Amino acid sequence: MSQDLGILPEKVISLLRGVGLILLLVLVLSGRGKRLPTVQIDHSISAQLPEDEFVYELKTNQTLGDLFNKFLNPNDQDALLSQLRAHIDPRRVREGTTVTVRTVRGDVKGPKSVEVTLNADQTVRLVSLSESWSSQLISTPTTVDTIWASGEIKSSLWNALLENSHLSEVNPTDREKLVLELNDVFKWQVDFVRQIQSGDSYRFAFEREVRTGGTMRTGHILAAELVNRDRSYTALWFDPNEDGAGTYYDLDGKSVKGAFLLSPIELRHRISSRFTSGRFHPILKRWRAHRGVDYAAPTGTPVQSTGNGVVVHRARGSTYGNRIDIQHPNGWTTRYAHMNSFFAGIAVGSRIKQGDVIGYVGMTGLATGPHLHYEMLLHGSHEDPLGIDLPSGDPIPEDQWKMWQLQSSRRVAFLDKLVSGPMSPEQSEIIKEPSNPGVR
Ligand SMILES: [Zn+2]
Image (cartoon, rainbow, N blue to C red; front, side, top):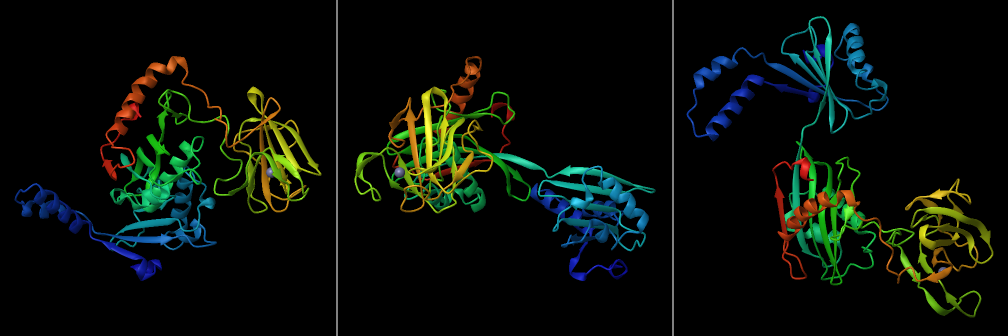
């Protein structure tokens, strides 16, 4: 039969549903410690028809139509493709897509069902009816669990989470995602590359959605605390409308999002010169103040605006080279200099959001090597970007304060279950019960 369909033998997975069901019942019933009424089961199962399962993978430059050709007559092909169009554009199905075909064993008339797995989350199931085909979009079932973990940091948070043996159930990819999440939550307060030191500690409660296959689909941090150089930073998720548009607040109900990012380029780049009132200028060969911070980074490294604002200067000068000034609320201005080029479309008057790329690192103007020169000015006078307590974001709106208090006390209780502090032992627990979305 597989020859009739032109299917490679290694692609053929044969299933005896009857045997499978008996095994399942044996397992279920023996688990309950009951004796098996074997004869009865055998009888009820014998009506099940054995089926064959064939799994195909869409190859490069192969269309679903090409693939369907292998096992469907032209009429069925048309019917199947038109059913499929109710859910997806069959021409856009990507290479590597899995198509599972099931046939009644020995039946040469054609398959009884076809499943097209679109991605890890969705499958279209097509079932043969007497004259036509029916289709259904099936979402891969997921469960939600909460991971609690705490521990001490010896080198980096990444290593700490990797070495936390209690997190062995969370695969490395998901742990990496966790580190990125934590970095995202705390990036306004703590520079993970430069400020984390041995003896720092963490504790967090992380909610994840898990597919049946065990991989994580989505997930976010419900509550987290980072103790950095004996200073504690707490972030609690608050999403009053439960639409995913929530944000993180500290214990006082103030947004942890700062009005400014800690750094205009990715934190892994080196600070090559700090803010000083006087230093020897390597090109001018005389002493002058350095009213900004230099970040040594390769030419082309993206430069991002540290806050929301409007471009008030965009030009090439002899000293600063390619320079952009951005005006922010409350009297703040940020300046970015020596850039190799500006981001396309940026002009005086452009509205910029925090984190938007505005240009690329270079060495235009007076510079000995590629670096970004960054300044912060308050009402026109220079401030040390690394020295000021950056202004924080918005507080909880007054009409949501009660709900916030209720939710935050719950979340703090989450954290309090985990011992923290420099001597805290590694801990982790995975709560398997589904969380109640209402109390997220
Ligand atoms: Zn500089």
